[in-house]
Length: 452
Image 1 (tube, rainbow, N blue to C red):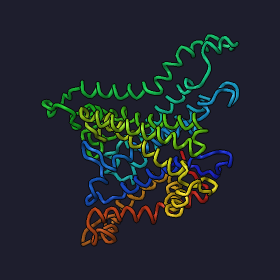
Image 2 (image 1 turned 180 degrees about the vertical axis):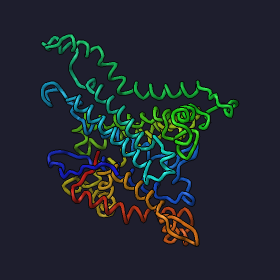
Image 3 (image 1 turned 180 degrees about the horizontal axis):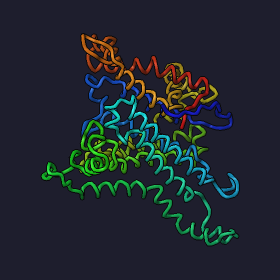
Image 4 (image 1 turned 90 degrees about the vertical axis):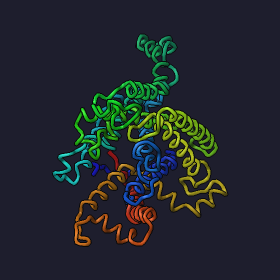
């Protein structure tokens, strides 16, 4: 399990916390638990990952976690978006921030390797994967967080030649910063994702796999792609997911996955830079309109790109990144509208509108639960992985043969009397409502926030 640190520091009354941020994280945690708890053999196709190309509900979980991780970067390191007088001479402490970023990345990678090795059986360790969900989160977080620390200063007002003329102690340095301010801002706000996606497109379509079985393959075929060649060359097929020629969390696809985290970073920077607008319902509704328009534009662009480059999570194609960025941006806007746009009660319990009073009576338990789950997203991901893996490896006799607690429990409780897809969803809902939700509410009631 993650190396958690628990803390009981409640949010001070003077600090405005957007409930929509936690609720959106909670929505993704719920989706992750529902997808991860499905009975894959009988689940509805929309609740399992598309095998090669296509898009299902299950394919939204991973990009969603990358998106919320990106949003958290400027929110947790907002000092880099404030001018130096706001936090003392010398500006924000970059060295401390970089050390914290590296530390968190190493911890995420270590937790991911722990989950890959658990329950430490010889057949698992022999084919141990070196990449995975948390490993990709670690690498993407490292890259995007360092990008933010290196370039966020370019969004601050002032500086450049004007500051030098005003008597800066280092006029040469100030002039140099003024020269690179615009390129740094362009790279932060648009050049970085274009560079990543462009490199993927050029490298992927310029590459021809030398394997004999791929000699006559044309087009984007995962088993003969650059992704497959790099992953197999780096650590061998036996260390890829399910022994495939490529790993869905492999090297090349991570290059585009950073775009989803970058998109969350941009949204998070907007929240920090326009904090007063997010502090009252009218301002929130105006920002939500921008989020919805941006989300629709990204999704539309992704669908247009898909006419040339298919949408596919296993290779994390640019069209997949664009569509999921659009869905996450618009989804966050809708959740933000519900919780902070005047349709939901504020932190003091007061309801701002008549619609809010009706929603409060009907949906208060669900909304509070989403916020509770969203306070500890990493904890619930790790917990769900440990629970499902453990129950899948605990043997019990069934019909004269060995089976797992997971399979026997699902068969007895739901699969024996409900249709396949319904049984799979009911099984996942039972786990969500009877196990994870009570834990989430307990953590919040105690003020415990488990982070790395």
